[in-house]
Each structure stands twice: as structure tokens, then as C-alpha cells.
Image 1: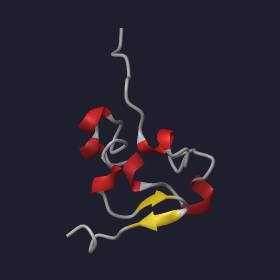
Image 2 (image 1 turned 180 degrees about the vertical axis):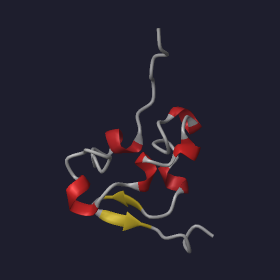
Image 3 (image 1 turned 45 degrees about the vertical axis):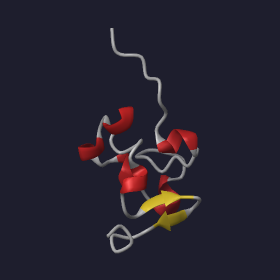
Image 4 (image 1 turned 90 degrees about the horizontal axis):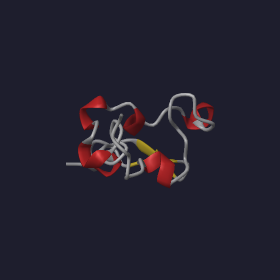
Length: 72
């Protein structure tokens, strides 16, 4: 049996659904946090789902959150 998931990803908490195939993907596109495999399982999230705060250009509240310049 698989492990029980106890933590939610950012897109589940925020209900933004900018994941591939999500209901808001066609509005602003796919959020980079949903696809960043280097963040997989960091803080028990899927891809960067629990590490979105450490990424540039994520989508939250219908807006791009930060840029690469803001992260340095």
C-alpha cells in the first residue's frame, strides 16, 4: 500500500487549480509549482506543491507571484 498523504499541495489549499488539466489552466496557464520535479516531496508535497513560496513566477490569486529577480 502507498503512504498516506497528510499535507496538501499549494494548489489544493488555495484552490487555484492551475495544474495541467486544471479548470484555471486555460486562464493563466500552468503554474510552475505543479511541474517542478526538483521540488518533489520537499515538505511532503507533489512537485513543488509545498515549496511554491521558494519559486519565482508561481500563479496565486490570479497573478504571477514574484519574478526570478525578486527571489535573489
